[in-house]
Length: 280
Image (cartoon, rainbow, N blue to C red; front, top):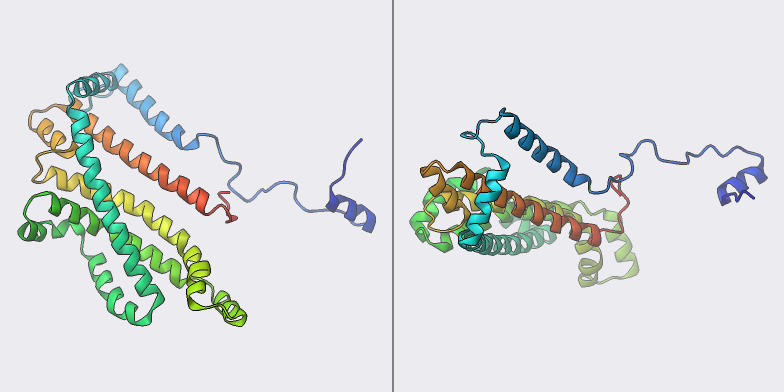
């Protein structure tokens, strides 16, 4: 016995044909399980094949099995773990500081015309100046210690947080404010239940950019005037022509970036589960 859907039963009873599509043809299609790992696996396979067939010169790019052996050696003597912890703490401190500053500035600027007048202009000026160009000035002000490195990462992080959160605040539809005024909602309740949830997509998008910016700044501050961390390990290896150690460091940076981005995507998926998009 065939069970008809409600739209089909209504179409039959009314004598009309149900012409609605049974599946979506214009969207990107169903999500592919572990789709994000397929491209990475293809890249690794190309590296393995190129090294095994001699297409890739070992002096230019070390073979993957040599890189694995080098990583095991670095783990055994504790050098890799020590460098990873140092780099992780730097990135986390800079990211946390930058996110906090960017979020506060975005809220003040996005919820107040006076705040926007005082804050938005200087932020746009900072946006046009690359953070890495400020490193010589930061060295003069803070020296070459940890504060300079953390502040550099924070300066690279807070701009994307501010830009996307501020944009999310200002693009909330005005009809929500009209409805809230009609219902007599207070400003505090309006900000809590309408403004902040409405700005959440922009904030999370900015957070993804901020994670990438923090790693970029981390690489630079660890290569310049650093005595510890993954970047320092790469710099020493470059001085001695140790390509395998350089590749190990790059792989660690890549794993940090991919892992952090995956965490932000998971948070985004859970926090914005109410949205209906093509991706969903």
